[in-house]
Length: 240
Image 1: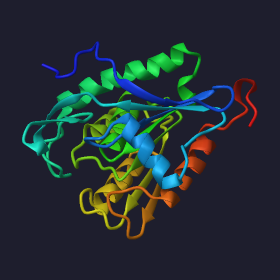
Image 2: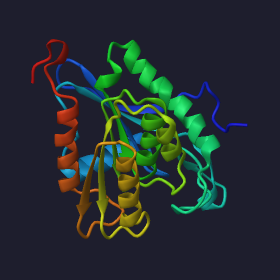
Image 3: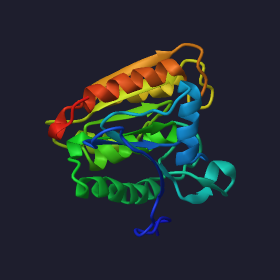
């Protein structure tokens, strides 16, 4: 039985575009955080909000659920893990349940007139992993995917699904990872990137020297530039 009911409604922190809305960005937080917390963290790093002229940013908050690495304690997590390691099975039931919930978020944007190829999905740590599952297994027609300090398990369902899928067009993956990360090892992020590239994904990987399991200004500025290459202004009469 899935932990998440299909009718769950995610709390959202939204940063509206400065001008006409023609694209959307879904930014998923790491384990134990919240949408509001991620927005504030980014604001602290950049000394201002991450904002765009034409892109709405949605920071949803994961529902509270028992989390095995915390000995079953409740935490705001997108899915459960058996342990924080790339060498163990995925908790696919909770991942797939959250894919259904997040699909409703994507569908809401489409209902509001935003095409799927004008939607980006990404996140930090667990949020990046969730975004990779959501995009490459369920929504291969989004504009792109980003994952900061994230990884996939060695036998991830993402790899298996991509091996079986027709790969005529897959969204590009943008990854950043600190070389000093002791929670999610840099090597795990590199391995994830290499495996996805071998399966036909166009990937970008930035190593950030001396960065721990954290974000910094260089990383976020690179991310912002990449976002604008994937979701340029000028669509639907929008001008920058």
